Length: 432
Image 1 (cartoon, rainbow, N blue to C red):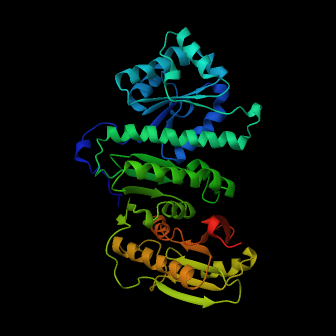
Image 2: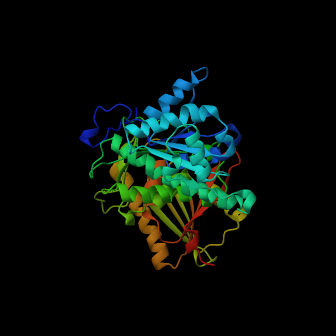
Image 3: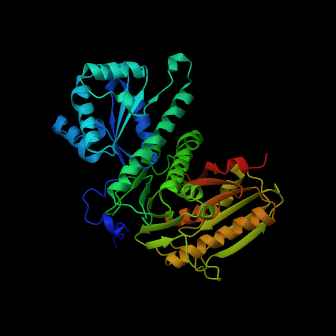
């Protein structure tokens, strides 16, 4: 069965071409700066902004000039110029790309032109524009990056690029929402992916593409990448959507590794009044709605003599976890007081373990209640979570468990028959 197609909820956006294209930024740069621009592109991608870049978006054998002009004038929601001494020497950028961007801006002042300067001053940029008979790009709200040679560390340099990425997210999403005719009741559509995936939707606002940081099924980002790239990106998306989407109802397509799916729900907690409508082959699962008093998951709890503030939790829906977790706990070096196990009353079921939307919501609330019991009544401060569940349900569970305590996520390496630690959410809440 094919997943349902999402169409925009705002009637003003019907039959407008190009709505399947999310917020998009055109990146203009010199080839010698490609590595730094690649990092900026990554920062945009993980925040949901598609970055149009010549090396990734020009068709092989295509007519370069015409494709680039079309991308700037018809596709992009912002023009980002990475200004370095090498860029000042590029005839193509100043004869083709910058004039096309300024022409687009003259037709629509809501179109953003974003100069990012490295090794060039705003006065030098102004003089260069004047020499080419162009409107000064100094008039646009740009940013000057710190010079690494001037003492700025790579960490500080990259932090500045991440701040720039957030500003570009805001700028491109503004124009994207206008393209969609969004009003105060508009319900945006997001795609969240760690695998290559094109969502079946006629209207996509943001495409949170994390695939570049998840090279394969069993290659997941290191802790530093979670700390410096992925979690900050989710915070930026949440904060920007908070200011631009009054209703906070978000349609979502999810194709992701489980740790990433949990992190997504964790970043958009129920306490922040976001509602996820998760689309897929299963239909639409929502994080809001009436919840039955019954508990759909079978529950077992065991006491242990280890660390009184630590618990181990398993959620086994798609496959059994008990044997693998038991075998791996000694090598993981975990000391814990409680071990909690959730599974289906009739046994694991990869295909139809979650019956429908109501069943998914009830499961997420049942797991959420157990987290609250552990943290509020059992004096637990750290839960180690082992799960085999649909990615959509992972998002719904993550949505329930923010602001409680530290939650460490694990990934199962099937070829090695072992679990590996991936990341700890809420690390600042973990007891010392």
